[in-house]
Image 1 (cartoon, rainbow, N blue to C red):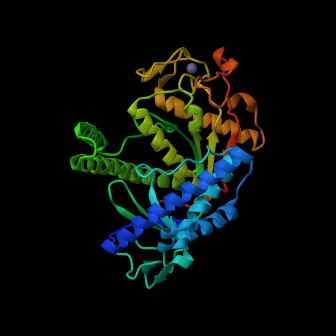
Image 2: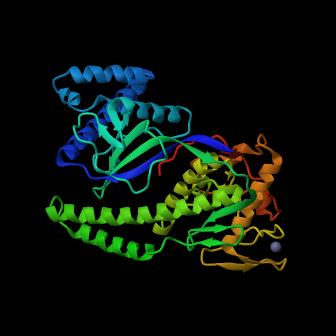
Image 3: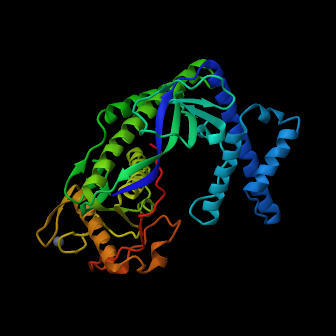
Length: 418
Ligand SMILES: [Zn+2]
């Protein structure tokens, strides 16, 4: 079986000076338009309880372009500006649906510099890509081929903090859906990146430890440089380059892992991060592991959709670490340094493998209950509280595997950002 999907292919490219200038100008205009539209929408709501939609912000943009102060908006392609308004619309739709927080302003320093071009704003001919307002095609490094006969429907250009340019081409593609069997639970750890219920431990990418040390040193250097100096700017780029390298290696690592998991297994059970986050931990390792976890989930979502697999997200907190996966008894407190423990029933547990097995069991229980069973939803969504609410039965040591609401991602958006 095969399935038609939208798939993004991302490449580096080397702009000419003129192209870099044009794109930088466009990024600036995109950010400005996004922020002004956001302000207009936020004010309309705060002052008049009025919801401004995409069409209204589009009319605002037309008006802004006619003013003397903002006439420079006419110098860049209008499509990325319109797309920025569409992105803002999506952000608001997610906000109103309570799927996301209120959109925030794009900062010059911190936000991603990018511009999105739809078909009317680029020319794709014989494998070359020319953007609006440019005479020459982009010099793209084709690190892997596009699928045969593919032609992009949307093109996103971006520049990261390390000064590297990327172009992402959204194309139609076809994925195969060969049947698979089996179900696996995954737990995110600190020592190893991930642990599978099969007992397999996935370690961090190679060289990451060394990279992190290098990063810490570069950050110390940066902190010592005088504000506003040229040396400080140089040090900042150096920090950004190391960050970028860590992120690249990790993404690569996660891509290989998720592809393998999705190929080998029919169903994958993971824990929802929002639930995990209820326990605060400010360690750097935890922050990085959380970022990896979010990325892993995104990858699993779209790859599961591509290949017809089930992704089961257990979003009800339960004491996965302290619960014996063999007999269901609950152990006492389990400090982070306890890597192995023995249950009174005789089972010897590796901390992380045991947690992954409990997540698997929770996923199996939810699968058996069916899609519509949502036991005790109220208590599973306590929202912002920073302390976990333990299930009273769990506190008494009574085994339970009723994981709360589950979401199956058969139909998640089949779109990637690879
Ligand atoms: Zn036991």
